[in-house]
Image (cartoon, rainbow, N blue to C red; front, side, top):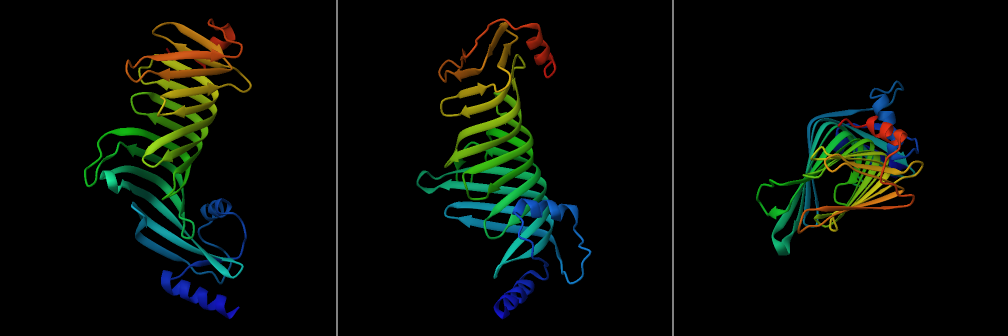
Length: 290
């Protein structure tokens, strides 16, 4: 008991004052609770409000710098340990990932209205966030070529990990390829490279040319193969190429680009049809205009 009390005093001295809670809810539930009430009505709680927050995080050769207009620090009792969270406002995050033997680095840049940072795990949950990922360049060179961007109501990732989760009102934009709307998704990385994109829920794909459209329930993208796999769940996938008047409906559609010619081929599997019915045309026109 006394050890915990001393730890709390040390925590308060370090942070200049915190809120203390004893709930054992998950981090995301606490985040929603913190959003709902930033001024607790119960007495005995202390609070720290900081201006101009800056965090620098190193993990091996990777570096992240988080800046926030302001922050509020919270302290939770968890058995005999303390869990420290910080609710950040108007957030920007710059992430450098390096491969020293190749003298290369890639850069990701994130902005968010609010974010919750967990000091113990390095988790960052960003609300109404957007992230940009650039092509690798030599160390200390400014990145110029954008590979993709993504936005969502909630972006969750560990600053030094190779996985990023997107939830609610997801918009994934692959530079030069077009944009995809979804309900949720996961981006996985292998070092510098984007390894796999998985999107789910009310998929709407619009090619950058404005001539290709698709509806699906699931989409998986493998950048190294330049392969997209679209899947239907309750309804088949619908793909329409306006320029060539090409119609394709199937439960699974494979779209793959030839890196040498730049041409894309399409294959359907499961109840394939090449002429849309009236109801399918109406379904496409609910989401797209051509």
